[in-house]
Image (cartoon, rainbow, N blue to C red; front, top):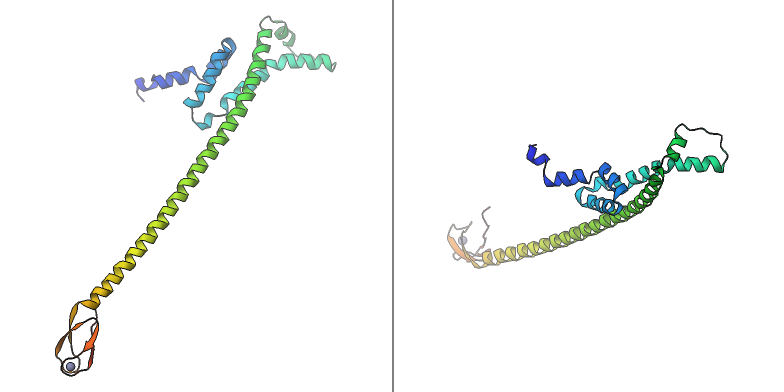
Length: 201
Ligand SMILES: [Zn+2]
């Protein structure tokens, strides 16, 4: 790969819309992040369909985990001491992470459902098109076959009638005289015995 190809516009856009970058953008500018998530569907093949929403759900769950643990500990009176949990919860950035986690989790679930529906719709549509095309081709082939058969039959009939109408030279097996007969059967002009013309194979 040449250096120019590596730094092509498409690769640059792919780099900008890569998973970690989008996750960071979703934190600072959520609307732009969502636009980038949608853009990814046009940039990447179907293999990447579920990557982004699943990553969003995982990151959202991780961001909400300390708060969830805190709720579980206070609600169920659990006697657990998790290292750094209090530090994380007391950090003045953590409320932002809770908002981010909620947003990314909900958005991830919605995008996952939408991409699932979209994917099944696309595959159903392409299946329908494929069936239609194959049905069309098979009817077309059957029609072609019918026409060819008909033409063959006509051709053979023509051959038979032309063979019946052209004069043939036939040597009489009895007297040896050469007769000219029309069609395939006739009579010898000198000895009156039946003679027959056979097509040479
Ligand atoms: Zn004869």
